[in-house]
Image 1 (tube, rainbow, N blue to C red):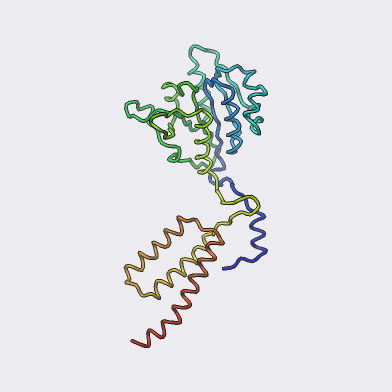
Image 2 (image 1 turned 90 degrees about the horizontal axis):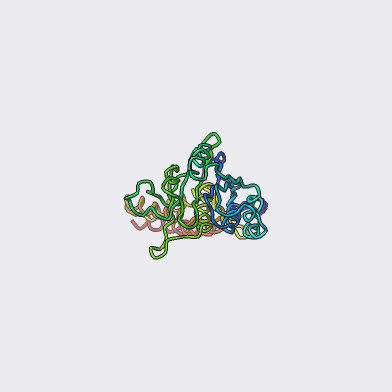
Length: 285
């Protein structure tokens, strides 16, 4: 199944490696850093946010000094995410003895609050019952939906009270010998998993993208496979199993147009040979 050259060129020109899935277009994510201790981590997180198309950053009650947060050194960590850093909202609670009330008021502006923890491995603390980032279900909404993701201070993460304000808790599985991740590394892993969920990802390398076979192309392939199986005259119940096995394997493989074209050519040739043989075999019966 050869693609028309003009069509192929047009597909490459219009190729985007990633694009937001329209069902998630009403979602808005905000990263909230609570009592962050080092400016470098704040800068690194701004950079990670830029990598994964997030723009909203809130720095709540930072332990690090504000002038250090906005310093040239921190901008160096942020790289192309320094615009996110400079637009970040920095909140200093009025009541430093009990900042949880201010945090609670802040989170009332969000429809969904996601907390993070390095703990949550045991079931003794119900507040910290956590799921892995890959298991997070991203909501679909017809109206704007605000989602906050909370990260605690580097030394001990979110407190139980802060965790208690979250709707969902995430935990990244790590080695039991040393489970603590750097704050910016943890943030990057979680944002990466979310990015995969809300975007349509295409496979590509620079100017030569790998165009994936669409559903219409795959259906043609499956019809060829079905025809081959029927010509081979397998037992009826086996025909279904063999067909489903091929279909499952090719669906998991996520075929490119080039790969599918080659496989189609093979099955087309096989079917042609089998159809030539069949009249001869039938005449012998």
